[in-house]
Amino acid sequence: MRISKTFLPLLLLTALAPRGAAAAASPWSTNPQSSVRLVTPWQVAPRPTPQNNEVRLGLHFKLAPGWHVYWKNSGDAGFPPVVVFGKTPGLQSAELLWPAPQRFELRGGLVAFGYETEMVYPVRATLTTAPNAPGDHLHLSADVDYLVCEVDCVPYRYTLTADQPLGETPVPDPATAPLLDTWWSRLPVAADSLKGVTTSGVLEPGSASTRPTLEVRVRGARPAPGASPGLFLEAHDTFDAGRPEARATDDGVVFRVPLKPHETGKPLPKETVFAWTVTGLSPNLEAKRTVLLGTAPAAEVHLSSLVRPIPGALLAVAATLAALWLWGLLGSPAVSKTAGAGREALGFAAAALLFATLWGLSRQVSFVGIAGLELLLLAMALCAWLRRRAARRSAVSFLLVLGLAACAAAAPWLAHLNRLT
Image 1 (tube, rainbow, N blue to C red):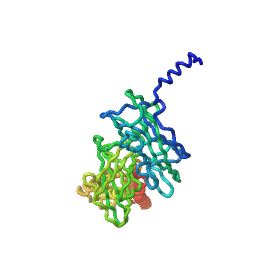
Image 2 (cartoon, one colour; image 1 turned 135 degrees about the vertical axis):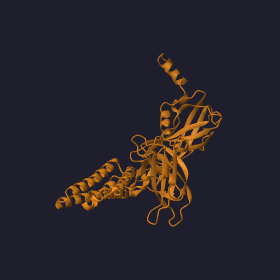
Image 3 (cartoon, one colour; image 1 turned 60 degrees about the vertical axis):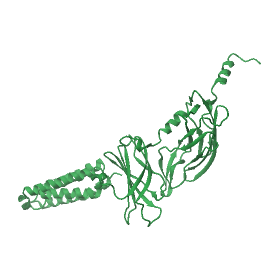
Image 4 (tube, one colour; image 1 turned 120 degrees about the vertical axis):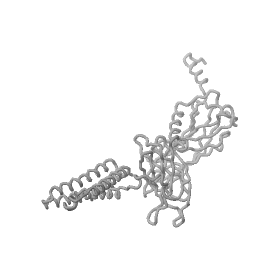
């Protein structure tokens, strides 16, 4: 049998090519809702040494439209995946890691936390310096249990296997290495490792008509461009968590989360541990804190947290009316003629209270809402001034009083309509 001159070089290249060129991933295990495989970032992985024996792996999922898999706290339904490398000689302390999740609204008011379309769960493990594997290969074997859900949920279990070549000269896989890097970068960073970033929490007990509330405050981290901050609590032994509400502050973001105790009527713990992941920041972060029962520390109480939209708008209206009356624009003309310096000073004090209230409302109401509120207050002052000018025209004066009252009544409605959540 003769081998052509063209075929011989191709045969030699095939024989000399690295055996790991197609061994950086297990075969796909596929079902109607999902596909999963085990991936590594290497065609040829570096041999482990006592100084460097960490191994990065990943569970790569592709999901049918509308289906999702779960975060470590699955939410109101489902369960997170479980992976066991018990049949992989030399692989130790394998840890499944959790990228920043997203929120899924389900029927019946339920919620789930997880991932859709395509994602990778990073896996961090250590490899002994002398893996008990034949030749220069590490035989990877992972037993994976997971649940994939849309409206209904379907459980699956697979054993994923791949042979990972080892060598003195590592060779990255051009397809799986960038994929793993992308999802590794989506892991939240420990807040304690970020310079200038602090995070804390306080558990507010609530009352007979309100539930307890967890307030989580993050300082020194700003929302990423175009992103909305989100808070994901890990499962807790005592509480179920409701929907968090976020509020931007001058130095970060504050979340308030309504909580539902598992046992009603039982006293709340004086201190408890919460763990959370905050998304939509640059970078995403995670923290675990001992949270005390009580009200927010005095150092963390700001005017912006004391002024709420409707009461704040009513206070602004009252301060405006007080200033107008003290300055003689409301009331009888005889009173305005006898107004002295003390009365004018009190009018300026009322105006100062008005400005402070507007500043506090600026943290609770959108810019559009604040602008509208200021226009209503100016319209009140204009109506009072025109009424003073048209004091002898009873019909015009009556219409201006109605206009002033309408502006005062519209202020709390406008503040509530444009409140920040």
